[in-house]
Image (cartoon, rainbow, N blue to C red; front, side):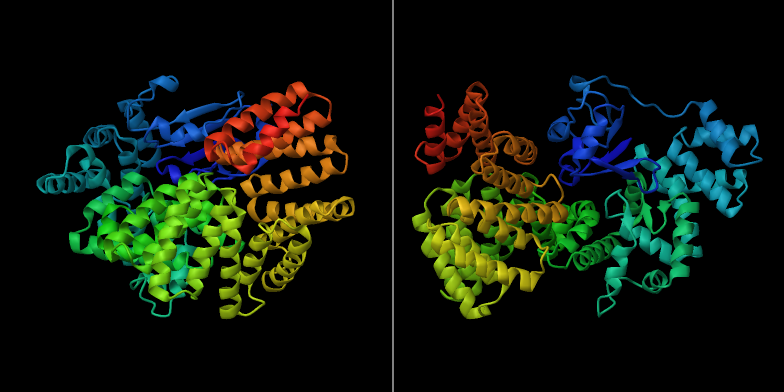
Length: 627
């Protein structure tokens, strides 16, 4: 059984149908981890259940709908409109008999009359019944006394104008929160902050990172000192669990979204602003690490749902700078994870916030433009990326002068776009200027110099001149990043393709470089990342050149599947995989299989680039010479 919180589409693991099963925090079921082909194979012969919990809109789930026929999908939602994709079942409240059975089981000694009155007052709502039972168990409260407390709290909430739709649940939780404030104020402070995060597993390690801040101001007292003490922390988490305010699995807690909503409604406006600001600063401290470092991707996997939940419209109005920073980092992380489609709306929102705050010509706007442009490039639309980067370059040159490092970054990104547009002549001088600026400012052995060298080598059109640049880039990257960094894999792959272009001897040298690059990339990014598809495709080309099309075919088929899953069916990268697979089928003596692949690749590239792009010409040539 797999469970996915579908309230935030941007936090849904991309290839759900390839998920790896792992124990679910506080659920006793499985939670998906994206990127494992093994689960897809296992599910073909086994029955399974995939739950999309609290989904908002059927359209938001379409990209993640599994295709394996042996399982079932269950969607929970508070919204209508799901009848078109399957059967519907409205879940009602408990029957009175079910309510009485729950109370009898969890509150030993409760008499039938009091249980019936309490069930009636609580509207037979299971969450409210469990909350009431947990409170009575923890505090040894007489059921009749609890009934009196509930009636008082309910009347107070109604008098404040709260709607009847949530007043029953709020009243039960307010009783527990009032008592908890007396028993453990730190626990209430933790709940206040968790109420602004996602109803997802919340690791206490997030708060540990806040405690590392020198000011120690991110956590109020007594919460800060309580979480810093292992014994007090354990006692605090235990209280939350016993009061039925949160589920607990070791150092991870999960709050139900209705509990979170009740807590937020209970906060006066002044506290609401203070807590919300604290949460945003807390999240910023948690994800402050370098996004280019694979070790920090694990942190982002845990924190992403909470960032997306916290950066709502209130946060944008109250803390625009921190909100923009978190959205920007979330977008960059999603792009790094190979999901530019989910990064784009976040980065578009960041750009709007930043332009509103600083005006259209501020250097910070240039950074946002550049990040959004890189997403458009990854989405296979360099035409949309180019004007964004040209504007970003103009802003940074005006603000910093022509030789600033930020200018070099903009030059390099714009050059990559011109390369994708098929104009290496425009890309090359931009890369050369970016390299000169970076070497002057950083020195000859900086990792960013390696990136510039590698990119420049890809547009020279001369493998003899490109090879020393790539060998130098590889040496710098291995020395500064270590031998297993993703940037090392990129340099290995680029160097391997240069060796391939140098002829038969070079192709033999290319294969081990590509195999090493593939291993590094799969380890760092997972087996289904779009970059893995590129490595597979390059390795397949070398096997084909070595006269082994049968070795190349499964690599290209896997690469095509990854590219289609990650980018969608009409991305230029998909067209490249289709075209190369068509060449392999031609080599294997099956032009009938090759033709529809070429034709589809040609349609994709013409739609993306127009009829005169070099890639279009190559694919058209392959199709024309098929027979």
